[in-house]
Image (cartoon, rainbow, N blue to C red; front, side):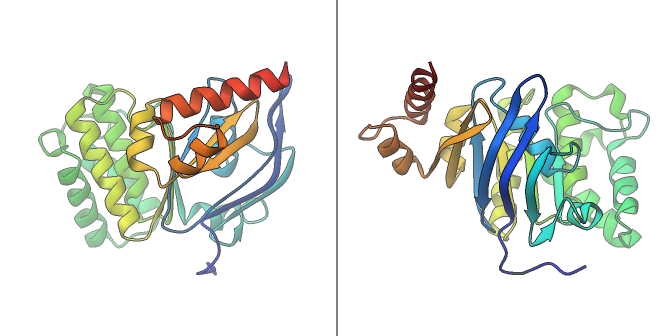
Length: 253
């Protein structure tokens, strides 16, 4: 597999998906390597549909998706090897404990067993799962299960990490651990794309922010750039976001 070193982490062109009505409407978006990008929007805006298409879980009606230079629609298996997807509802095997689950996932990626165990134990430690390493996943809280799912996504050291509401169900301490892990991955060169309804988290963590509504990207940029786009001089992300969405709704009325 050839991964193009200078290609964007994610490049979408004219992506479209329609159910009863367009859920994603000719969406184009580029996220660079080593970037922390937050994709925001009201409920039903098309965020999850977009990310599910990027992850290869949903086929677009039309458009192009490139992941680290790999055509994700023509070469879906190769694209999946360089990325990770973490949904808002963790999908893990209930009958395994966290360590067993991580070793199982590592086996799917054909990781060398000694390296897999080392990486699994490291992720368990940094995500605060040590005291639950031998507890069956079915007996873990939703927040703990979410951290196990994140660990499983990270174990093969993906270059692109896609997270849909990653802080759902996490208490303050767990959320802090997850944010620290994500920041570290970005510092090491990985790219993170995250959706969240917790706008102050996006404001603090994301280098660039995209705002999507009715399946279309209506604005993107740094907080300062979004503020100018909204016709404001500063303000919180919440204020800017609400103004952008309200302006789009008014224009569409």
